[in-house]
Length: 275
Image (cartoon, rainbow, N blue to C red; front, side, top):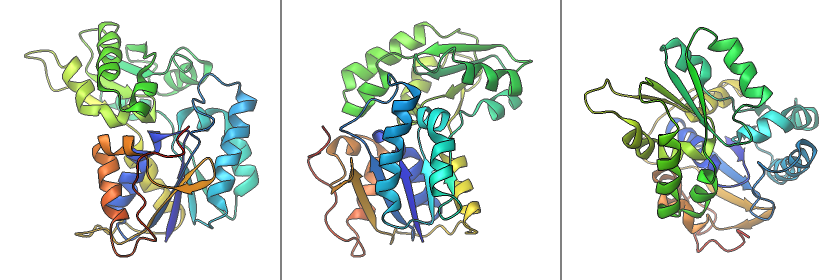
């Protein structure tokens, strides 16, 4: 079994780790675009062009499914990706987990990039799934970039700034950028009010991983140790998992699988080729 994931950068790590936990035997292809990131400020047509190149690099290795582990690419490029790759390769997009957060009740905050916050796409999701809940969109400028660089000081500053813009009475936070799922506990710590019920955080990684398995007719099969191979493509080049990925538990989990005897090579390195 071979599953590919794509994103501009490390935002694919949460979904990749979720797939690894569900199917430790699956071979994973991580296809990123360090030469073209960030995608957020690009026009929709430009995002689509970059996403197609990243997807084509992954598709050349014949995966059974492709996870678009990026909210921006899912918004702008999903139709083009499906038109090119399906039905040969099922394409699974990422949608912010607004619906399950609304089921749990409000008030809800949606942490997302400035481009996504207030966008027609996000407003439509709120209208469809959280119309009866109190929802606050919280832009998080610089947070995804700080995650990409594993810059702790910049991460702390961006989280602190977003926390100050978040109402104190919220009960749930939707992590509307896949990069933010790497920081779930740090975000929870910044927002949890003393004496208040435990704050619920909603990401998309587990759901898209499970959906990818369903699309190819596979069942979860957890195991004690990973046996699947890991392949990393950086703007189409086969290289090492960037060292910045190891700052996160999800990256370390994937690195462990890269070190198994089944791996093609030592695919963890110093980040060469990140751009």
